[in-house]
Image (cartoon, helix red, strand yellow):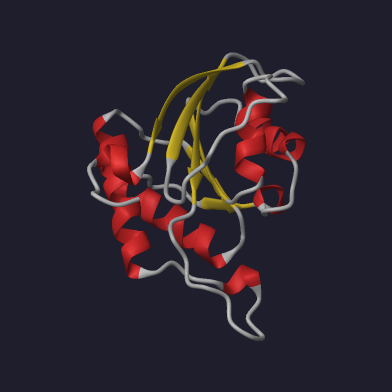
Length: 164
């Protein structure tokens, strides 16, 4: 199974009285995200399932990914992908999709860097997960503990944007 880890694009700053979950993507964040996703489409990314945090900026990110990657299914919102979750519930959500060849996760830091480490069975691994970045990890099987291989990570800069 190919697992794609997509951090939400650049979002608006939170203001007084604004819930973190309600922050939306800014136009520049959407543009950089589309650039990364177009590069991913060129690399053959066509998810069979998209799982997303229920936070507004993650859902917006997942919708943009669905459009750019020609995904026709439903988005699956899950609390497992909120920022302060942990990797084990994410893996359990992925395991439900065991028939899928490609699963895309749309979420947040600090969770996603921990998900990289968990999927790679490298608990001390540190990954700087940029906003709008997309990484691919290949995992064989859907057993209780994953042992993945990191294939690549695309950021706005590596996709062709002059600023990250």
